[in-house]
Length: 237
Image 1 (cartoon, rainbow, N blue to C red):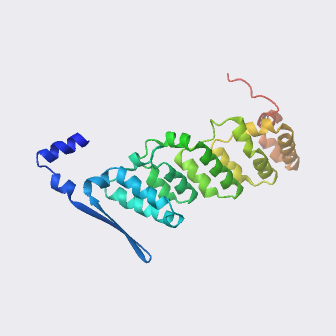
Image 2 (cartoon, rainbow, N blue to C red; image 1 turned 180 degrees about the vertical axis):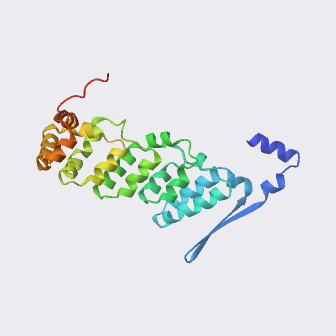
Image 3 (cartoon, helix red, strand yellow; image 1 turned 90 degrees about the horizontal axis):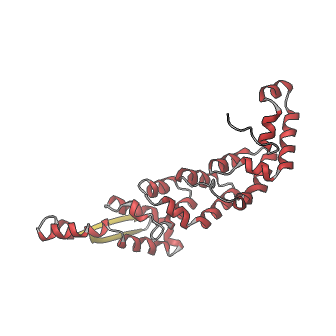
């Protein structure tokens, strides 16, 4: 890219437009942020990374980050280059924690390094899932699912961190947390296998509480045994 720009500058093409200062101004309540740089710098990532990092350095500046980022993208910056493990990948954590769909979408719509960002911030993302489940912040869990984040490849040690809480939700018939965790790749079968006695008792109690007609519609007990982890599913034909 730099060689192409240099060739254009040498030929006198676009050089004036690229080197002229451009202004990006964002008005907040009682204040205004003004960024004035050559047009070429707004399309690069070094200057933008520095400005975003400066805003993120203080708690007071965090709320301005989505607006500044949106303005930079409108000025020509590429979100696909920004959201990288070694660059502004941490912005995804900020967007998820703020539970802002617009902020998350702004970051991931052109991102090409999401899997690398997930791996780099694996510990922090797992902590985010734990806190969101603990405090019933379902929007954060939905946004994680929207981003493509998954617990499916996580080890059993990671998944069993959620066992007691989700088992309690099942016993209380509070299915919203269970549904969202399953969307994120949590294994309900793994939960049943790790907590066989409790899960079998739960399924049996629900069957006993059902009317006879409903029991017939549910099906035979082998299905329940498979779900409860007391029996392996039959091999595929």
